[in-house]
Amino acid sequence: MDRKQLTCNSFVFYGSFYEAISVLPLENQARIYDAIFKFAFENIETELQGVDLAVFLLVKPQLLANRARYENGCKGGRPRKEDNQNETTEKPNENLTETKSKPNENDNDISLLKILKNKMTTAGVYTGVHDKLVDEVLQSLSDGCVSGFERRYNGRVYRSSDFKLIADNLKAEQVCRVVTRLLQNSSTIDSRQDYILSILTSHKGF
Image (cartoon, rainbow, N blue to C red; front, side, top):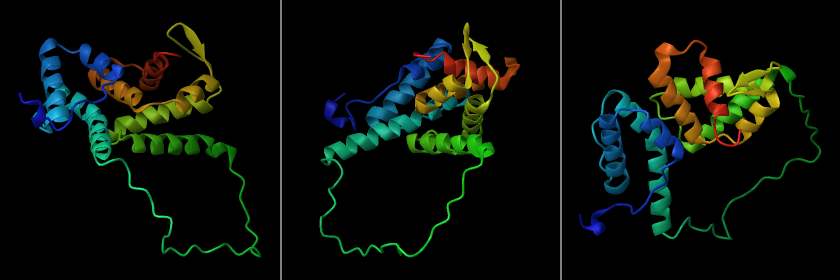
């Protein structure tokens, strides 16, 4: 193949994607990798079904983000804003007294969940296909952050502070990995929340 025909010369592929795909049969792996490479390098979307389609849809947002960065790089990056803009910015009235309401401690879990959802929305995890599973992963992590209970996963005890650390460093590929595992093993999971947290804590560094 002529290299000039490629729409992109490189893309980022996370280890969590490899880990999720490697547990599948070789036939599935071949179809998924072929679909990923065609989409990344040639902008061709392959028709897939079942678990092949599910895994590809989890990887697709990262591929689209890679393509956007590649195209922006070819254009020289983002255009700089001109110094002189015809915009009128209104200054706040200094005589007004603003009353700020104190946050309710019971809303801490809701606020954290919103932060996690916004972060994952920016990362492109929400595709409309498995959004409910993404919500379930983020809700479980949020619950772990505010719960006063200790939990034992992978031979180690985790407290709310440990889950907050995971939440602070949560990456899109971690959520994609959990969603993939949920799709693969949904029929054998006893406690979905414990299953989700056990996968999140198995990530390197935790």
